[in-house]
Amino acid sequence: MDYKYVDDAREQPGLRLALTMGVPGPWSQAAKYLFEYKKYPFIAVGQKGAQDNPELFAWTGHRNAPVAVFEDEAPRVGWYEIVMLAERLAPEPGLVPGASAERAEMFGLITEIASEGGLAWQRRLAMIDVMRAAIPDPAARQLPNTLAERYGYSSAAAAKANGICADILAMLAAKLEAQAGRGSDYFVGGEFTAADLYWACFSQLVAPMAEDRNPMPERLRGPYTAPDSLVIAPILLDHRERMYERHLTLPLDF
Ligand SMILES: N[C@@H](CCC(=O)N[C@@H](CS)C(=O)NCC(=O)O)C(=O)O
Image (cartoon, rainbow, N blue to C red; front, side, top):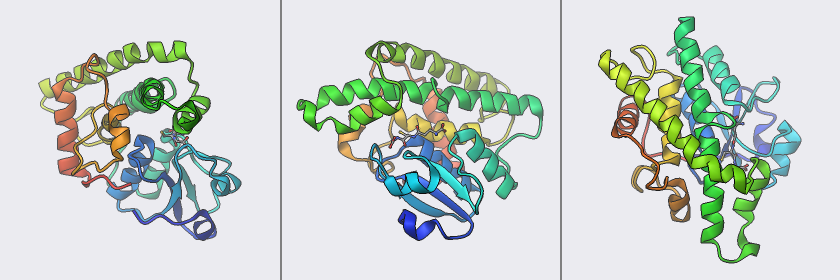
């Protein structure tokens, strides 16, 4: 990925996407794939994970990623508003169903995957414990400590995280089973939607793909990998394989 500095991007026209550099941060990956899938051009701006990012903050009011800035419109940071921006800028190929019932279903699924309190949020809480345990020197725990401060960590919340993840993963698997029974490989209806794209990206936070397809830093592979106690039904991983094969590029680029 060719990342620009904030100062080189902020006066540029069009779409600027601040994305976390060097790690397959699933929110950033999903935002990137939305626009790549739609072949809508953007300037990638580098955000440094768990750092202050003062230039990004001065420009957008945010230190984390993704942040989507289109022309002189207000910066967008939530996954929902970034999906809707992508649909507006490039309606075709669509990633949001036209029928309201399917739309509600699709946004509900992504909420469970990507919103506050959802699968990735809980995985991050659990990951903070794993990262802290892996770094013996407390003074060297800047990454997990910053994530803890930013994303509502408490040991009580982390203790509940795996149970919530298990429930969401089981729900996603049941949804795919039901869809398979109707002859669909996709989460909603019969076509690729943003829910498929989000699951493909966020699955990396429970079962990262191997090095050749997900060349992430080795020290993060352990924390990104869900514990054995968390059941990841094969249908979930088969689904993400198909989505990358049919609709998304590999290897991951971050
Ligand atoms: N605002 C996003 C979530 C963004 C988010 O959680 N970003 C994390 C991904 S791990 C991040 O940038 N973490 C590193 C950091 O805080 O610098 C949404 O609600 O869709």
